[in-house]
Image (tube, rainbow, N blue to C red; front, side, top):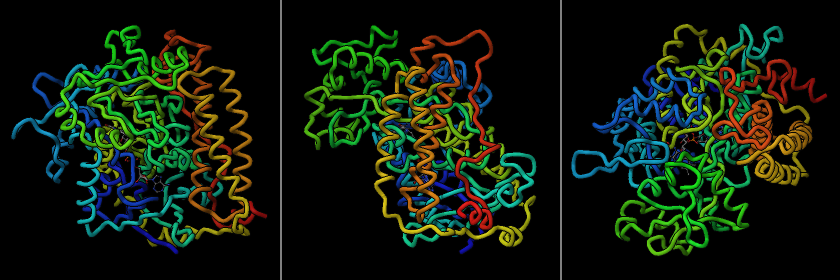
Length: 555
Ligand SMILES: Cc1cc2nc3c(=O)[nH]c(=O)nc-3n(C[C@H](O)[C@H](O)[C@H](O)COP(=O)(O)OP(=O)(O)OC[C@H]3O[C@@H](n4cnc5c(N)ncnc54)[C@H](O)[C@@H]3O)c2cc1C
């Protein structure tokens, strides 16, 4: 089956929904998402969205806090633009119906998080992401130009280079023209044809054993883009959130940084505080510093966790300020008004991603990326807390403006439809060995946690590189032999994402921001700081090709 729409949007978090809503006034939109519409990291965001809203704050201050956290790798023009344009985009969200917490009838309640010099985090109690997701979904559902495809998973981007062997992936003449998408319910692969493709598939926390991310975060956008010849930048910078609830059933439930913003203290089992030994900002130090400090203290003491103590706050204030966290912790048997909470770090945010310019444009024409899946230059080597929702919002707005401008310059959809072949599954059969998927999935997540985690070394990275290369071979063979399932596709994507993180980490022979290696414990400040850019433009790992070539590959 072929479906043609002007704009193809992959993902329904804040980045995808914002873009879909804005372009829908100018053309038809297919909003394709691999789970339920609301399922995304966005819906779980607690702390809030950073923006210059207070009178004692300024764009310059927010810019300098962001650059300070980014450790020399932020691109200043990008940082300035996103921060400057943030308030207008937030006002649009409010006009759509988003309700942020206020103090009294007029002013917003602004909170503070690690690395911010001012109170500038707008929030909706501790359910900010849900409030944004809910608002955008309501607006998208009201837009007749948007067709929504839930439980549909993007497999690969279709580019000109897939259709014409003379064009090399990501090279001159290449451009995005569609997507192959798996309809989970029927197992059918649908060919979506479009004039513009946006990747808004979120992060990749699932590449690690412990993560705050939802199950959807399998690095799909990065893997799809890489296979198409797009440039991928700075994947070695993966943020570990310092404080996730330590409980076997809690699936790394996140304890918001705003709790430390409200004066919460990190303590060891014996009650001692320790952050003052690591950073002048103590518990409000940037996340990488806090995560490494906790990792160090846990390794030193052999304890399974440290503790976050907010018992200095009155009980009613905790319940009022953190209703969701309070209720969830209570359901696991912890009353945070009375006792410190056991916490551990977990993989939280992918700072690297598909390299884009200030309009979300990748190096492949008509292929855009926004939100956590992209690398715009805002975060550099470390993301400042609550800057990610802001990035997705502003970048999707800018990408939409750029994409709308491209509509007229494109061949008609029917011309494209004619030249793009349908997917051909060749001689693939039903799998009788699904254990390969579950085994490899577990192995990748564990090896990434143990060898490519908070503290790295060359020895561990080489070990990880060898293992991942073997696993990729096995996955490739499995991929071509058996019918596609969501699990197989996700496995292939986390394996490629893991490989990119490992390669990035080996390339960066210094410690900077979120990348800390025992072999090079200091930043290399001798020359200009470099981005690690990876591009698979010569040999594709496992790629989608036109039907004829699929057949040849399988023969
Ligand atoms: C627990 C938690 C708390 C957080 N708190 C904050 C916070 O307070 N402030 C802040 O700024 N940031 C926070 N973050 C980070 C922030 O939520 C995310 O970076 C941001 O929401 C990402 O938005 P997105 O639209 O890029 O991706 P997401 O919201 O993750 O959406 C991705 C979408 O893509 C879909 N998808 C993925 N792959 C495919 C595919 N192959 N085919 C089709 N669909 C696909 C998913 O199903 C999903 O709909 C938090 C993250 C987590 C996990």
